[in-house]
Image 1 (cartoon, rainbow, N blue to C red):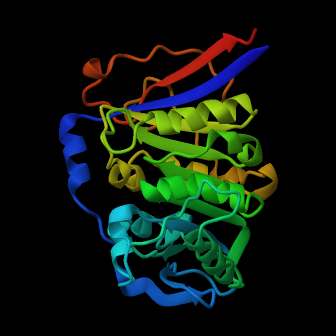
Image 2 (image 1 turned 180 degrees about the vertical axis):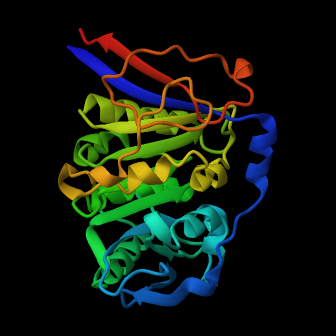
Length: 305
């Protein structure tokens, strides 16, 4: 019996990696401000609204979880790194509502406990409140997060596994013991191989645990990438992340009109959606990849004895 592990290995040049340090704040003009409370604590949020949609048209909703440095109560800082995400989903084929809650400096999204953190409970309250909008397609609720929010992305799947059609955690990690509870949710995880803030092993361990549990997932490891890899990932120059994400529906359903065309492993333009049964492709050393952006695929297979 084989254990199958699918890696989408991405690499970027040093010049492209340097652009990751530039923050991409979101335009707040198409967002509305709100808050939720549990009676003892509250958190603010921004809800970005898509433009140009037909009356009554249902679109997905994306929950975005920010990093530790964006904690606060100003209801602005949490949008610091989500400019590309908000721009990509503001209209057109990938139009979506984007919900961005902000937790304060004493809170954390994730918890090692069997009960969710207060921040997570409030986040779920805000999410389900936003889902009451009749224009939200509740079969396509997605979650993504960066750094602390990447940990929160893994954590929220165990807290409310029947809500999310897909998840995109970046530079985070989770509890491998929860893999069996979240294995049915499609995941595309991202992490930089040289992350010196959150070890890449945090994501590798989750990928291995989900694979052992029978989950289906993609993993893009940015060769030589540090902690802040998400501006380029959310920009999605190869048009692969959003096409994959928006094709996911609850119940393992996939919208065939949004499934991306397969991209050869040698493509320098994009990362492809790759089946776990794909052929084995050798991955070059990071030093030899240079300018290639998010290209290359490795499928690791070994006998389970």
